[in-house]
Image (cartoon, rainbow over all chains, first blue to last red; front, side, top):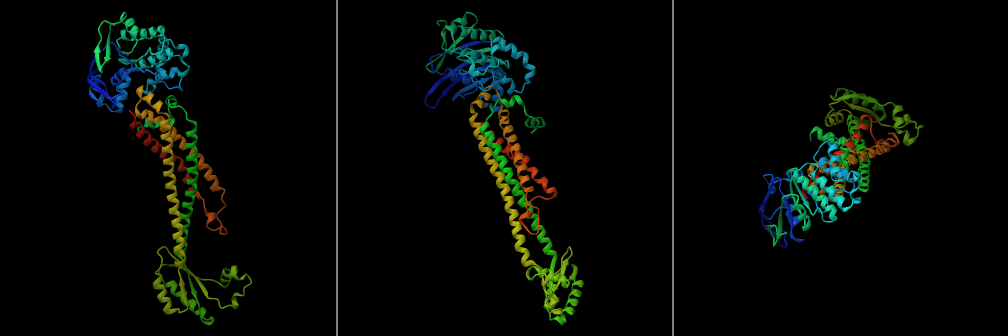
Length: 225
Length: 299
């Protein structure tokens, strides 16, 4: 699905990532962990093309990401669902329209997707809050709405950046549950988190691999979590 | 642009329009600017059409009419007039030649000397009105022949008066056209600035749209549509007010001279109706350019 080959990233001030190689196989579930500022978000951005590596190559769906023009990049974004750390909503539109935004921008007829949209809202438990504006939502609700938006185009890969960053334990369990369900439906999942107990909880339900960034390198963490 | 895209631009996609938050202030500014510019364009257009009309009219009237003046002692005047008329009749290119009657000559002098002038008792020169046909006549040849046969005749083909007037009217028309071009350019510049401001103010929105997979063309269209429609409606109001202004101007009259002739005539009233679509076109081009440039700079 997504393949990083000897990828390096340099912010200009210094090297953040060096010789990172990883393959996200279809249907796999990966956690990405590491201390704050280690480059988790950067690595995720490299995966969905928001950043261009300064060394090495990134391939997504057998395409070289660096070679994509702006329109091809937009099409790539439709195939990769991303839950951003800060959610990224349009604050003047209600939740339901924010969730439907990917449908809208890809030119789908919204009236045909009404049932899917209802079902999705129900799945993330936001049916009641459908017409609230994003700033009116709690942290957990925002994260669930962001997750719903990321899967509305039914992408093959879902990338989540600290989806449980500012929600309580119960809510992070619910979010994890949703991600696990998506994985069982065959989606490839990559979650960046520094919450080790979340990773432990996930390991009981799904075969998750844990990638750890340390010293600018990516390592496969063992069972010693 | 395909037909579907054009229809989308005109009719709009209400859903798609909502992705960019409404911006009250710039919207009103764009409306105002395009309205004011359209209003000015109507006047420039009226000026250009009126001066153009005037230039053509003067050039034509003056070119075709000439005056032959016969200064001769009273006893020879009739004979010389007859001779001159004979020569004029023989000259190719002269359509009519007519000696003015005593009353007509008195009427011409009335503004200076009053109606009670005893024209018969004064040694007035005899005037002959000469009208050329479409091809015109050879003024130099005619002069030479008159000099030889009718010594008291002086041909005045009005060239001296005509040329500066026609030149003035033509430069007025040129100036009006330059003004119209400048108005168009200024509109484009101001709409570019407004579009850039709107694109900058909505940088967050654009970023989110890019993140969820929107194509540049989709994002650009939301802005292009807005500015094009605003320019169109602003210009429509401006043109309407401008046309009312022109319509309220006094009718063309001899007393008012050139100034009162400023306006549109007949089909000319339809010409300013082209201003709103042209303004919309200018806005479309300006916003397209601004949006394409701006979006290209984003990652």
